[in-house]
Image (cartoon, rainbow, N blue to C red; front, side):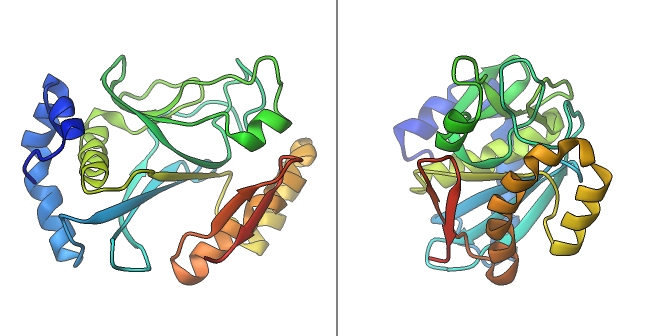
Length: 235
């Protein structure tokens, strides 16, 4: 895992990233190999469940079609409730389909990975003047709408993410679901959260992405429609 790109070299010029590599590079390499994943050419996918308060790390070799679950990180802090983020200051963790758009080696919360909230759907369905922003997966355990997993685990995840980017993954997908969206659980959650009835149609709109990935461990194709809904198909 030599520093072979300007991106990785830049990241390693920061002391927190350098320390994260010193502590995690060997174990990350060994674990990928044990999972039969190419350490020089792999891709990752992040999936968060708000109700269960976990963030999953999935990975595959570039040549493979299906992902393998590598890690499940517990969220060590949580704000808001179920339902998508719709405005600045609502303390909500977003729900929907995103990607990592920033690597922050000087975060106020140790290290952080930014997601591209608001996405197209959010811009249509949220408060258009003030939808909010700056949503991160980060260290520490404080949050007002982000996904904290502690300094220890963001160090590991940051190394995986830098390595995936360094091996050619231009976009790291991040899917955030309100809960594990099997049909039976959907009905249970709807019954328990009647006050969120306005969000039920949104949940039904994104459910197929969860179900398709559960079925075949392949990321479905997501198209944002003009009305803020999604077209979700197998690739």
